[in-house]
Length: 81
Length: 229
Image 1 (cartoon, each protein chain N blue to C red):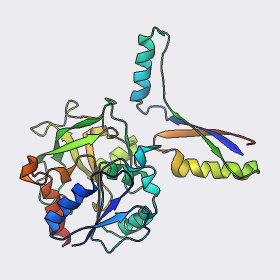
Image 2: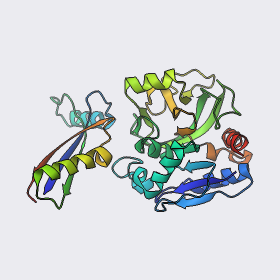
Image 3: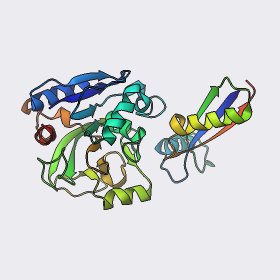
Image 4: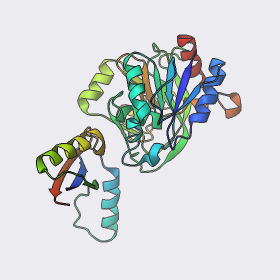
């Protein structure tokens, strides 16, 4: 199966890159931009057909390596590879 | 005294650290490759600065799961002193030996300059030869040095006297202007619960010889040689 994992900064964690992007969008004339937060997107293919087991494995990957849960949240969608 | 320097792919301060260690110890430290799973007998383990694994994913995240790190964590938990400098500090937080995380500098820039640090505590193997409250000068060279931890962790660090160094003015005043990277509480380095694991963004190994324009870093090396020999 394939997992599409999105990693985002937790609310309240300072995101200077997001702020810089917001500033650049304003400079381009997108005056309506009220906030930008930058995150990561990771696709992982696992040799597992059972969604329950695949979920458990993906969550362990996120907890152990892909996200640092001090500052980041993660979410994912599973699909047949 | 025996010391080991862990070398990750992308470490670049490992040799400077080895030179500083050798000058202080009078013997050559062991250089240990990250892929090894066995660590020589060591009174001190040093995780050097650099860009392990190209800083992929997050600084220090991949290195924290290197085979050798299992052994480093095990030794640290048994009380072996561990010093993580710059990328080494990032690895220590990712490995869970120190709380919090080093995030992108608030300026978004790589900063390479000397900073003033206030020594917050000197009753540890690393800082015995500094005075508490002393202002020292050490270089920083990093892009991900903004120390972040949640309020409960920061409170714990403060109340347990686990902050090693803070960025400060020449006179020791801890101000926003003296904070180069946006770190919470101007924190430049922290200890674990026992004071035997130290992570710090500044580079003591870069100021250990008068020829390098200063020796404020040398006292850290002579401190732990004195404490651990």
